[in-house]
Length: 374
Image (tube, rainbow, N blue to C red; front, side, top):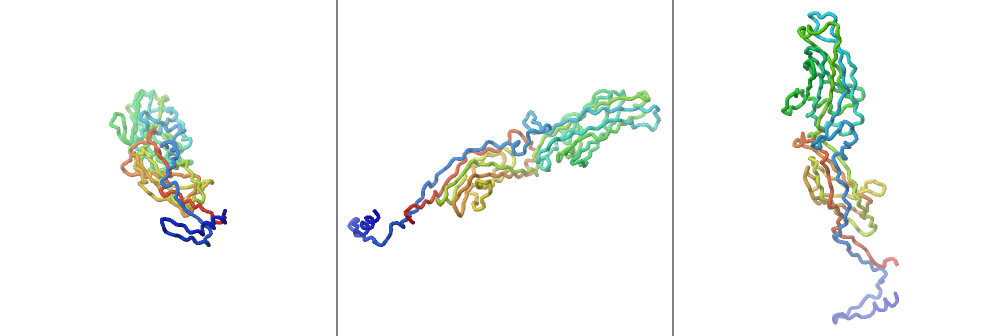
């Protein structure tokens, strides 16, 4: 067949009245042709599940992190009740006003803490400490109370609350860093710093009880009276202007077209971001071993900064000097904060969702065909 092809190639070809003579020395075995296929082709990528704020910050599974009726994440815990025993001196002299008390403080231990609560990027300025007091003493007392936090066995913060009045019977107090306009809220500046960052332990570390001579005169000298104190703490977790985090989203995308001249692909997507932080998106191509492929670079072909609480479309161009081959793609989202979002609560409805994901081959694939080397 090859001999016959060469004989035919040496003949005169008459096309449209014009005679063309073919070089009989040319070997058709070296004929190589390059063609473009799949130009503009699109390959859908399965959309990953929505990434919730709880997924990103690993908020689930902690007994002191709860969700309130509005869906806001809060820190909430209670200490064991404290039983104060007040010993009235056998003889009440004019210089007696401090009453000896006995109690064993037991701390609340935070069993495991999410990494982000170690940072300064959360705002707990709406924190409240609630004190429920039940006094069996038929007199009016004044109490100074000290709260203390520890981390790794070291005292991190102490906060002294002075001049709380305890009448006979039951009394409730709310210590607040910021007033919500309701009654019964005692303003305590910087109260939220007790939990910023969240410590290993929180406890009432000291209680001092005082009474005037007039009040002491109502009591029986040498008698012991009891006061029960229940302490609990509550605070919504809010964003601050320093909040930062990053999250990775693996995509089920693979290209394994060897030696076909694929140099460029574009990843398209829609992203819905209900988290109030702006997101900067990065992309990595990984090999079968999960390692980053350094020879594949990417550039923005569209807007790749995703504003907070918005839906955006984006396109990312992947290019390479060799063949564009990878086992998977990973999106990395880095959130940056700003003063405008300070005070917005972390909510369990906040998420990031990808949709309409696909890879496009805008220039197609360059394929070489021929009989070279045969």
